[in-house]
Image 1 (cartoon, rainbow, N blue to C red):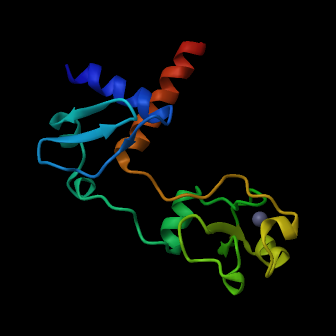
Image 2: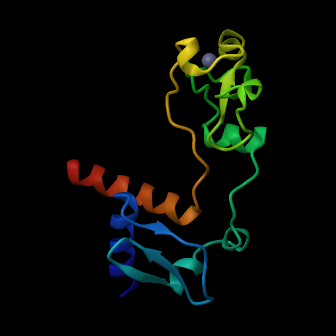
Length: 152
Ligand SMILES: [Zn+2]
C-alpha cells in the first residue's frame, strides 16, 4: 500500500503539483496539491536517518552553498578557486539568502564585480534555490531514474 502512495506522491512532487509540508503528526507526512491531500505513511519517514527526520533548511554558508551547487561555478562551470557570490550584490540590497547566493570561481566573481548577472552579461546556469528536503530529493532522483529506464 505504501508503494502506491509513494509513487503517487512522487508524480505530484515532480510535476510540481504538490509540495511536502512540515511533519504535522508523528505518523505521517502530509503532501498537498490543489485538489488532493494525502498522507505519506510512516514507513517513508522511518527510512530517513536520525538527523534527517529533524531536517530543516541549512544555513547559507560556504560549505552548504558549495554542496548545493555541486562544487561548480554557477557562471562558467569551473570547479577551481571557488568563492561565494551574491547574485544581486549586497551593495544593491541583495540578501544573504539561498536564492541570492551562488558558487562562483574567483575569476567570475572578479569579472562580475559589483553588478547583477544581467548588467555583467553573465547568466546563471541554474536558478538558485534552497536545498530540498531529502524526501523530495529522493523522489526526484527516483523519478529521473524511472524516466531513464523508460527511455531505454
Ligand atoms: Zn566561473
